[in-house]
Image 1 (cartoon, helix red, strand yellow):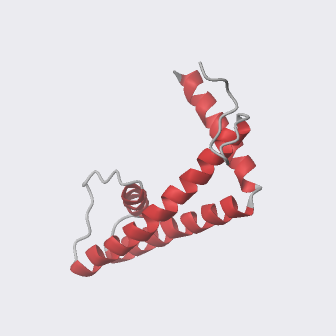
Image 2: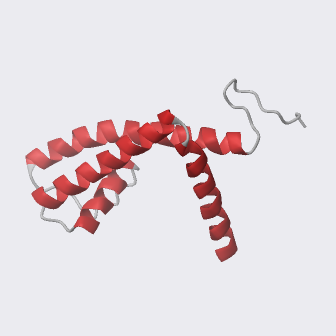
Length: 121
């Protein structure tokens, strides 16, 4: 199992490194990272959560996992979370789409035109 995890992490690193060469991918990564950092800072300050708890909440919110173990306490922060979620989930989806594109390209697929290079069975 540890070998599988190492293989997955190695593949992820290679895809991220390949994607970083693309300006659109790099821009999305920077914007998404900044968006997560902004949420982390705001939740840490306004909700008096630790940086780790704020980062955790920000990531759980944007990935739509939302365990419910943390929740904003004031109406203003709930409203901020709505806006943060709506905009951030779109960024997260766009970033993952670019990540998937580079993962397919690195395996020799050309998904730009929707066709697979493999023969039908």
